Length: 116
View 1 (tube, rainbow, N blue to C red):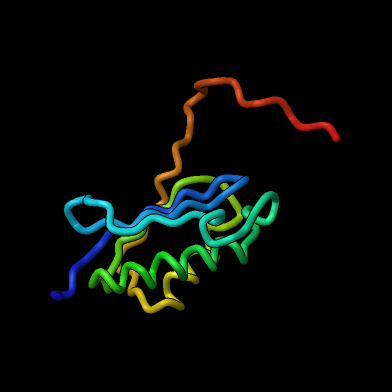
View 2 (view 1 turned 90 degrees about the vertical axis):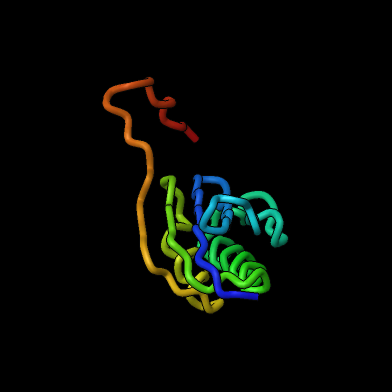
């Protein structure tokens, strides 16, 4: 199988980390989330869960012949840096890195602050 380039989409929310790896045309090859790896509840939002998710997704992507990825990160969660580290540990080479987090220009009102 020929070496192909891919695109890794990392969506990091405050509750979960979802990683989708596609080929260069945008066809989904692998996807994985923190719950898919085995983390449940509040453990899904940790840095360790994001790294484990990235390692599992990268290992599956290597089976599909993907060795080089362009990474697009979206979200404000805790797992942004850890998921990048997980992709590198698993052996994928990161060629480009974009932060595509949507930033409102005074759009919708944000949710109220949580009181515990």
